[in-house]
Length: 400
Ligand SMILES: *Cc1c(COP(=O)(O)O)cnc(C)c1O
Image (cartoon, rainbow, N blue to C red):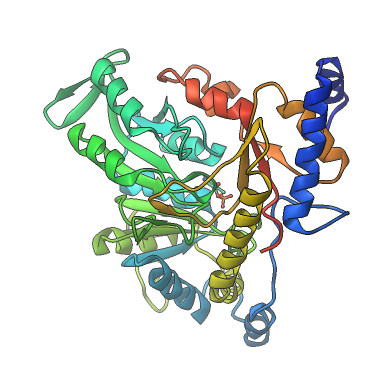
């Protein structure tokens, strides 16, 4: 919801007539590309047109709605098939998947974890959940992911290697891992980032929450990290209502991930024995049933999203002051959300205009280093993150 304060901020900004014209034109073009002349245009809406009713009804009819049932296994198997990952562990949401990924990657309390400042808050929060400290790095303006060049330059001047450990020379703390985020469904430059991770003894984790169906140089994202996470929240490409998954190609880690996300109970007919600290992060069967039906529709969702991205690219191709954000050449992106790079100074007024016209566009997330709980965290210079926050408009990917 827009607040009164927001309104007065916009009204006090002086916008030139040319910029006002541009803003109106952008709103019109969004509707043209979406082919929806009036009414609400949501950022993303789920659609249920496959076996959703059938599978969910089956859960209700059989009584298997919760922690036992066949849909969780089927959902996990389908995820493996789609992503090419050896193991997929369905969990309660993407945030819990990230929490477990960090735990199983061996991140310890008091260590620092590198993470882009441009991400959804869950990525940074998960680092806090394992009592580690987020260390913010800058993003690439060409793919919205971690910029490998800036990362390498930063680590060269701010860290030292001691044995197998990377130490932040300013804080004296160990930096143990990097979380790569595939923002808006565009793949980060995994090969280049992987190289930096190897050079500096960093474990790599992928936050692929937004990137189901995205391929990097022909391989599905989420296969390069020791562990990766997916989200099936209602606003993601595929939804289970709420849900997530951990991906890994390491069988031992996969077994452990399943074990500790299901309370670490040793299977037994009547005994309740838990051999370590576990979590109740399992995905209920009824959610997996919904998710399985959604996964069956993924190819259609993706083709519609890609077509819409093409339509956007076309309508925005000849307008000065705006640039449609294209997938990097190496990324076959899922186009979860679409984005427009704007000339500086018009984002707020544009959001005001689109909001009034029921086009529910939004800016990027406020960068993590601007949030109260993370302002004092270590960080490199975040020029690109700040610029992207000021100039990137996320606009409707319309219906699946
Ligand atoms: C959605 C999202 C998450 C978290 O997923 P939830 O299922 O909402 O917990 C994590 N990271 C990114 C980048 C996301 O977009």
